[in-house]
Amino acid sequence: MTFHATVLTLYPEMFPGPLGLSLAGRAREEGKWDLDAVQIRDFAIDKHRTVDDTPAGGGAGMVLRVDVLAKAIDHALALNPEAPVIAMTPRGKPLSQERVRALAEGPGVIVLCGRFEGFDERIFDGRAVEEVSVGDIVLSGGEPAAIMLLDACIRLLPGVMGAASSGTEESFENGLLEYPHYTRPAEWEGRTIPEVLRSGDHAKIAEWRKRQSEVDTRLRRPDLWERHEGVRVQSASGAQRETKD
Ligand code: SAH
Image (tube, rainbow, N blue to C red):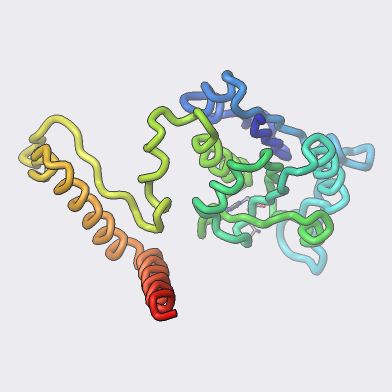
């Protein structure tokens, strides 16, 4: 089964963009995923092909019209009825590796890219659209966010990444940041590679990497660390309960 991405956008020329190169580009040539970038304006209803209008209640900017968006989404769903519909918006749920992994296991995704002030709110209920954010930042449009989302999915598709193991040790896969990496030269501007990594002792190296991964997560991402610790405590008490029973 090919992972099918449909991107609904006012700038289809932005695609495949970076997804046409390197790992994703090669995977696309090999038929591991495919992409339709669909012009939202093609679903406009009036003769001026209008896609937006002024915000109800006043204020700056323009809002994408719900009727036009619905027509675009219906078109995409007709081609891939099982695909989840995701709107890129800073008001959405933060994108996670867990969500990316689930998407990569599915039939593909329909991604709705906003512009201007964003979408008429009624679209989210009206068409079961999931709202997703790529971070607490504001982009000028949803296209770079869509490229991020798709890139993260594509690298997880079967046969896309070279080494089979390189997916599972990455940051976030086990709730932690990955350990730091080094390569030759052994010394650079007086800075050396941690001795243990050159020891050839695989058990020691694994232990060092696990520890670094934990230390860095605790220092850099206390939010992740707290969640990780919570899960550990929970599963430990779960195990205790099991032995008591
Ligand atoms: N008025 C909106 C921002 C609109 S930015 C607000 O304050 O919430 C224009 C478009 O860029 C959005 O519709 C969305 O598609 C995209 N965008 C901006 N920031 C984003 C983010 N952090 N994650 C995902 N999409 C984003």
